[in-house]
Amino acid sequence: MDSSDRTDSADGTESADGADGADRVEPTGDLSALPDLTELSLAELATVQHPLLQEVLADLRERARRPSEMLWGWANSF
Amino acid sequence: MAEQHAPFRQFIVKVHGRCNLACRYCYLYEGPDDTWRGRPAAAPPEVLDRTASRIAEHARAHGLTALSLILHGGEPLLAGAETLGRFTALVRDRAPAGCTVRAVVQTNATLLTEPRLAILARHRIGVGISLDGGLPAHNARRVDHAGRPSWPAAARGARLVADRFPESYAGILAVVDVTQDPVQTYESLLALRPPALDLLLPHGNWSEPPPHWDGTGTVYGGWLCTVFDRWWKAGRRETRVRLFEECIALLLGLPAITEALGLQPFDAVVVETDGAIEQVDSLKSAYEGAARTGLDVFRHGFDEALRHPGVRARQAGATALAEQCRACPLVSVCGGGHYVHRYRAGHGFRNPSVYCADLQRFIRHVATRLGATASATTATSAMATAVAAVVPSSPEGGIP
Image (cartoon, rainbow over the protein chains, first blue to last red):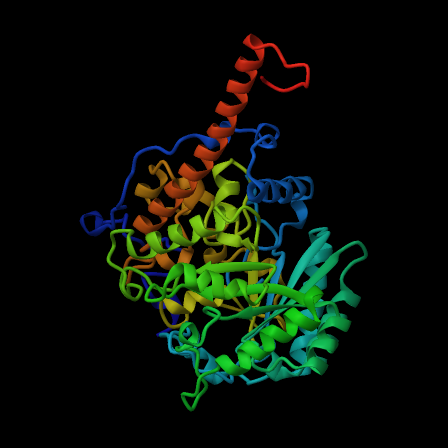
């Protein structure tokens, strides 16, 4: 069957939140709010004594300087 | 208002459509889609030539300063290392001035030899390796067409890259196998000295759930949390782990570059061996023809693919998510999870991820670790400041 004939096309437009709401998939797990870590600035985190985190943050700072070169996205390759 | 599209920046070119392995869980060859059977095994020269021109055209039209060329398959090395080199050179030659072409080949490592690696290095093609762990048992499902284990050849190839071509080594992709010990899996992969790792959740969806999945978040979420703690508590960054680092970025409110998490527009497109322009092939794990666009490099530019509804849905951020996801407090981090894991037969992709509970558990775990580390430092710093304020320094400069 051609994909264009399907009701479950890859754009997700014909989906469970249409007429068939009773069948919709509900999220599971702990649904409470996360602690807001976005309040932590990179400058504040620079004082954190955690070498691994410091290396990660160094990469994130470098990436923030060159957002147009963010290429590492597709899951099935490096 | 005119529709906004993020241009494609990742061009996945299927230089060879067959594989010398027959991994038991392969989403391409063992899944519901068999469109690969009707396509040429290797991409003919005219397809590669036209693809290079289309990539350059897109880069020029959108003023790209960098793009990623991903040589994929099947097993791309079946096309020959020289072919990969020539094609990469063609793309670089035609790309506009000022546009950096970052090239990588994603391989099962079984065909890596020193001469082939030398060719790839000469053409500045990085080498990403697909393995599911660093021990034979971890790779028991990665077998050739006769059922023989691929591990001996793959291990030899991975060690060759690490020993002789470390500058070419891009990293290892591993599909999570929850029947294996998480720490042993991670540590055995570390022994192959990858500069980066990614841990991929096996493709599955609400209609075809992943293996051993139980919906509680314990199986996959728990497995990832265990590896995260091993990585986080190492005292140094033994390797980059994409899933973990992108989760940290998102928790800090920074942009991420993974399709597994986050709401960033997805910017990858595939060219098949016959020149067909498709959406990423992980969609094929959902149903036959799910990745199809009806476009090809001979008649269409990549801009036309940007207008495809499936591509638009993956660039629409939260508006493309299920109502219950949009209301979830974790949505800015999980982003609904990997697109293909949301599928439910007859209901499309506008559902939470089948890994919803696992992602909840994992993201909260990372948030807790990050928050505790930050607050411990803040508390220590505040305490030191308070102590310094009330206790005079000793003549030696320390606290007596």
